[in-house]
Amino acid sequence: MDQWAVGGRRLLAVLAVALVSAGPAAAAPATSETSFETLCTPTDRGLEELSGLAFDGDVMYAIGDSGTDDKLAVLDSDCNMTRWLTVPVDPYDVEDLQFAGGALWLSDTGDNRQVRDTVALTRMSPIDGAGELHRLTYPDGKHDAEALLIEASGRPVIVSKELIGIGAVYVPAGDVAVNDLPSPGPSALVEVGPLPWPGPVTGGAVSADGKVAALRTYGEVYLYWAADGDIAKALTSGPGMRIAVPRQPQGEAVAFTPAGDLVIASEAASGPLPPLQILRGASDLVRPADATESTTSGEPATAWGPTWWAVVALGVAAMVGIAIVWVRRR
Image (tube, rainbow, N blue to C red; front, side, top):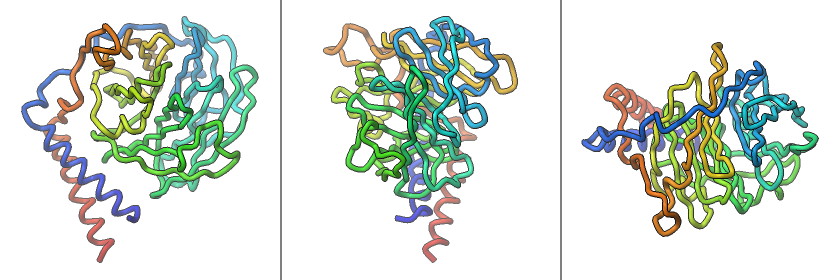
């Protein structure tokens, strides 16, 4: 299937989700924004484009996106800057950050104009910043992606960002782990499937035990339970649990602490540096009763429902997609 047909298929899926979501369940509320607390506020202006966040114990790592992604910040638990690490490879547009297997993994997958023939993951030592590049190629054209999740097995999962449409989930062909990706590559990616809901995905995270995943948008977080550690399957198999997040200037970062708390962060968007917000015990919200004593709160993402103007916009987008596919085939 060519790139136009893929786009048309996803736009049709968006319309279907929107129409289903517009029913009575659309009025169900998400978890209250007050569930989040302020963790701390960065003070270094080098983090005004903050796009990726990761934890190793009490140490936080943070990185900005294009234009500020040549260095990585090391912060203490109070958001105080302790040092900067130079990124080992000149990046194009780093959009997310994960800590796995004792290394930092930078998701150099930003492509707003969809002009890149390859994207990349960059391994980086948290000690001295040493590392290397691992190029990747999509199976179905060019994509902008801002979410990287690394499973307990080491397999990286990339989720594309679609401003209008449904994002898709990609993994390396052969389920290759990040540590086994050739450098510089490229390695081929394969599509696992589309997300069950529309919206621009701006960040991803995996809990320390590898069984809970989070995807965020500008206004929400979706939590998923993956008992077998197959995050890619969990993302594409069901909608997860939807949780509203506090208003942020441009929220693009999300990470789990080792204790299972969820932390979100935002770009400054030309204003003051926004605080990091924390949802304590987030990983327990989606664990089954036989896996934890914690009770679930919040609403399933099936209760998601766009406002009527969004439904109309999605319908128009779907019709445009159908027209493009029809013209292409003609």
